[in-house]
Length: 197
Length: 197
Picture (cartoon, one colour):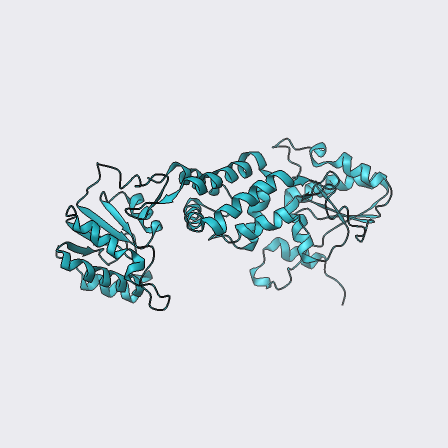
């Protein structure tokens, strides 16, 4: 019905997260309509990203330089290290602006089902970084899911023999959250971890 | 925070319909993670679309050939012509599979505010096509909005002197639609246009 080039474009766009087949069609049409202002620039940006962007060999972040901007920034705390599941989590922490240390990107979570073990998460590399001695505290920021917390436990077990302080993000009521809309697990976690006022 | 290439990619992706800044970031990450299977193929598909896809000089559809596949298909009814607002509407009609005639894409709707007049909608070109004599009926399939219906009226006024039959899509209850969820305008349209059983 439409040309082969447009079909191919729709098919690839529909593989992006957040775009179904209908929105991929709309996006493809929008791109073809905005050939010079969007389609060509996006093609160039993708080619540039493919050429330049690489995984940081120190922390696992994506950047055009290796080590990445964060690892190479001398103003960042080198005594604090935050362990995250993936680069999306790293970016979320960076956006919050609350953390000025460095990172270790696991690149996934432990999963016996998918055959993902400690080596796949770069734990030997993490242990080697800690062995260098500059890191005083490791903050585990894996997701608050069963897999995330299991992974946090295993990472903590790997790190405690190294004599480094290990901590994890607090669980509780999200800021702005009404109790009525929260799940039971979050409410019990918030009650258990209640703080004195 | 992230490399210049990724920032640029996120910025361009966020201009696609259906992708906000958050989902553009997720899409960019997904692309960088799937460099060989998605990022590079998408870059190539965009470049190919930019090079090949053009507007059909007869109907205004997008295709890699001119006249487009629909205009060039001898099996399609050449006596029926459907007037649509844009290529998205043309594709929607094609997907429904209910129309086997040819098209005229207006490329917009009449709008005094935006300075869009009859010439901008290719009405002289449409009149010329009808003047060639093969077309027996023109179906107006502009949207059922104020602008869409105003445009349909003006197009009809342009075409009736040419002696061609002009029709418009029926208004009424969408198939699968419950009355309780319909707006008043649709319900009155359906009552006015009720059919004998």
